[in-house]
Image (cartoon, rainbow, N blue to C red; front, side, top):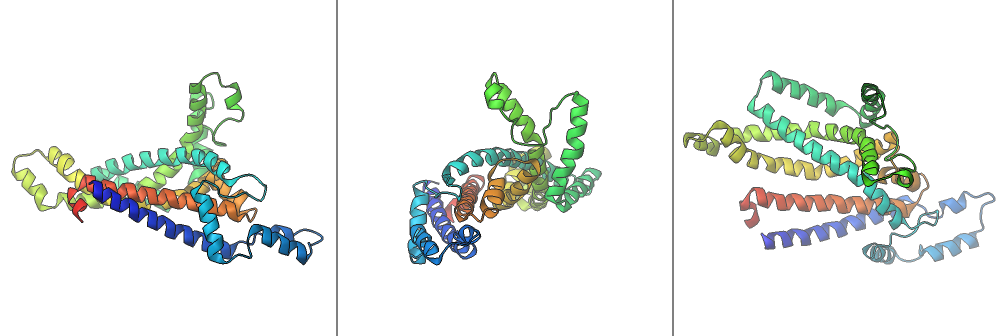
Length: 330
């Protein structure tokens, strides 16, 4: 297990290096750091533009610029935005905001996918299976922004009316100024949880819908396998056979789907943050990065996202070995 993990870590490092190269190449071809100067009225002289190009290192060869940028990223320096603020400081703050939403959504989606997938497989073609299938297909077909808007307009309003006070919040990741007037940590975190509920439900349900279908199909394959029939023939109860022998093997495909779905979850988080006005990485990318034609912000967002995706795929590889010890020898 130790050497298996080391091999996967080394492989992940090479994948991340390749990702960083592709990210830098694409951004270098797509963004013009001098665009903000060219848009000024009156336009600056060519001598001024040449001086700025020299200061930014744009006259250096591509591989030199890539090495300088990568060396800074490794040391935690992502450069500065067009506003002069360090990109690393903004990324750290906003990654924490986005992270709590994505982690909460992942945990909820995985639990729902396993429960619904197992029930659908065990009770195949029963009314509960048809009901879960119908709900899953409806959720898969819903656009993220529209589902988020529905939650804001209907669920939040009904719940708040039921409790007679504001329990679910539709704007922001926390109440403005809550850190100054909160009398305890619980008051601060309860406020954040109230803001977290709707974005988490939005991301979790849309992800769970697809993941539950994979879990159901995987569980059906396991239920029809020879070793499951052998376990039943040895006298094990059906429930024990399903949960002790079947579920463990059926989780392996779901692990793959979840690991690969992290990228989709990040994309959905960008839209969700926009709808719920969260100051996380998604709005940072759209408003400060793409909106301001800021290459350092976009580069920072993309490399952090790539690192998270590679990390979760590494975790998935390790979970494979835990769920099926034969994979350690592959």
